[in-house]
Length: 121
Image 1 (tube, helix red, strand yellow):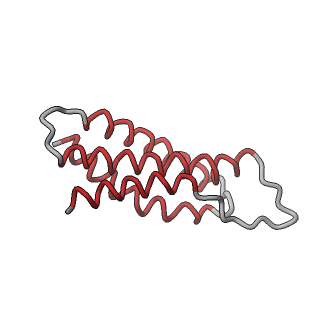
Image 2 (image 1 turned 135 degrees about the horizontal axis):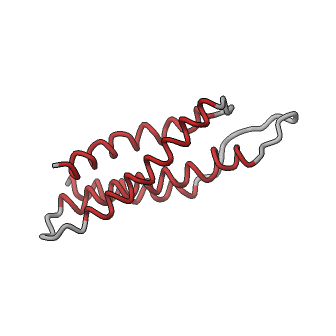
């Protein structure tokens, strides 16, 4: 049951990549390249990395006899680390509406912790 649920979770995380941006900009705000990166590209990359992490954990739990889960988890961790670094950079630059990334981080951080545990085990 856990394996089926984890597969569905990986698929759901991947489908969140196609979710539109839900930020209402006021008339005096002109979104530029920073906002494009922070609210369009970065969430998509984070959802894909979370999906990769869930899929890598699923591959680990399936006990296929090989170590095919390691590259998937490594790619997911690398994308997650780069995206988290960018989120921290945007936090320092005080980009508005950054709280819209909180739901992604609440799902990605536990997945990354489990993936790190599996990789360092």
